[in-house]
Image (cartoon, rainbow, N blue to C red):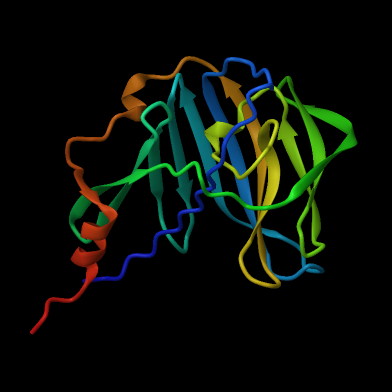
Length: 210
């Protein structure tokens, strides 16, 4: 059986309750770039699309290396399903969100702002305990829970970096915000998918014992 590579970048955290966010239904489109080294030019390798309807969130990604992947989350029930194909079988891997996981850094607001499709984008510094500093852009009026991205962020990230190794990073950059009513069918698991746990899925990928 072919090995399956699952790229799941799941960031879990509590959300600040004092921040007021605009009610949002629609889609947010990101381009994903790979930067091999700090002085190298990033190149596009993937995309990420977030679709939101009430407490339901759908995240779609695709790349030449890993193919397509869809994650459907229910924010109220704190659970998600990763939809993927293994050989000729279709699986919906059930997971539970864990609000206790955090990535430790401090933030500092920076001046300057711009707009993307009518939504204000601001920026902040992220400062890590080991001294690393980077800049994160965010939508102050869109709730960060739709991306489930670490610790005390005060808006949905519009541009952010994820470390791959000591030299390389992935850069996620929002390119379009489309606010419109979405069909609820987008957030349902198709009937051809079998719901299983991650443990059971891993067992299925192991070669049969002789």
